[in-house]
Image (cartoon, rainbow, N blue to C red; front, top):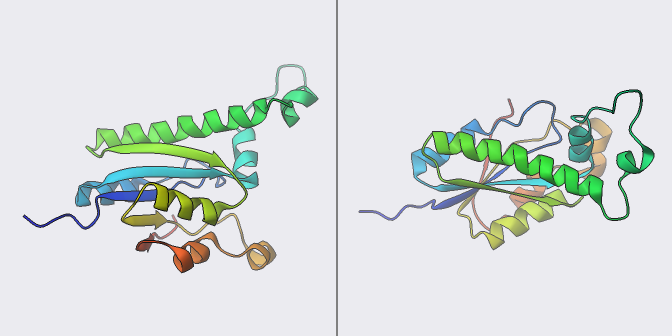
Length: 165
């Protein structure tokens, strides 16, 4: 019996996009390959804004300033990381329903490509699956570059760029 070429794959989950992240393509691919799926998200400023937008202000007005801006102990960041973990767990559960072994992990950083590459090395993945981001367009794209391009340039393994949906 031939050895599997892809035993473990990393799928980047973009939390800064509108709506729920769709990684069904990664789940299907992992199922077809019999690979473990590692769902990874980097909570950067656009992801934080998207996650904050899911919280409602308390009745009677805006949230208290310390709750909205976070406190010295990082409660806002902790809340957003917990939100990201809930999103990732829902995707892990979706994968499990399809017979795919999966786990999720999130980190807070503005260095998205570097974190994806670091995670790929630490997790010893055989394949990275990533979608082009729709959040950076025009001038912002020119100024900051493309996460996909940076990952493609330095990846320690093959990269599959999935079509955006």
